[in-house]
Image 1 (cartoon, one colour):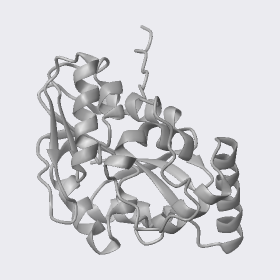
Image 2 (cartoon, rainbow, N blue to C red):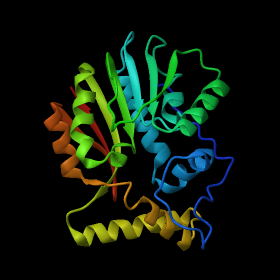
Image 3 (cartoon, rainbow, N blue to C red):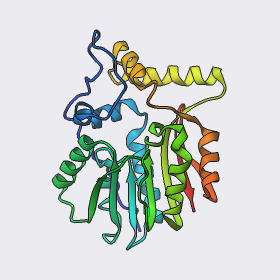
Amino acid sequence: MSAPKITPILDTGKKDTVFDQPHASIEDFSFNAKVADVFDDMVSRSVPFYMEMQRMVCELATDFARPNTHLYDIGCSTATTLLALDPVLDPAVTFVGLDNSADMLAKAEEKAKKSGTSREMRFVTADLHQGILIENASVITMLLTLQFVRPLYREKVMKTLYQGMNDQGCLLIIEKLTSEDTIFNRLFIQHYYDFKRRNGYSEIEISKKREALENVLIPYRLEENIELLKWAGFKHVELFFRWYNFCGIIAVK
């Protein structure tokens, strides 16, 4: 039997120009209406192998999703992951997208409506710092989200995900990383910025976004992420993707 075709769909019609004004003041990065409007273009040009990571996450999710359970996408942004999963998972799996940005959720609902899906798919405003409800989950995806949770709250968030997950359920995480070794950290960041240049970002855009993210996106080392997952109770933890300072991790309860 051939594997189902997984095709993440991005709305890249509007180009990301959020940080292209050289004299504009820099504020902390937020997922506001301006970012939501161009997010699919932004993330596809800013995250190496984004589409491949999406596809891998969807493949692994199909191995663990079970009928009459929930699949949660924590930090669902514009619903790219959920809509890629929709055609390949049992219709009895309920999808729940959580995000703290009303603008992102509006974009997600718009894309879901355009997709014509008949699946039960709920989008919920949720702040990980305030606590969330997870129940009857066979799969939880968390793509480029944990890095935006303040470190003080990460243990609580991870414990919540673990406790709301069914036995043999899985958590799929994509994260940006830092490295304890300063040589590798510098080289990986250098090659990451080269990647962004190849995708059309200017030096001003790269610099301004780096400054805007400085106090908002706080990456962990790979070892710290793995330790956090094991601390929460996950028995099986494995790396499934790595590109310089980005990684994908799967954890099974």
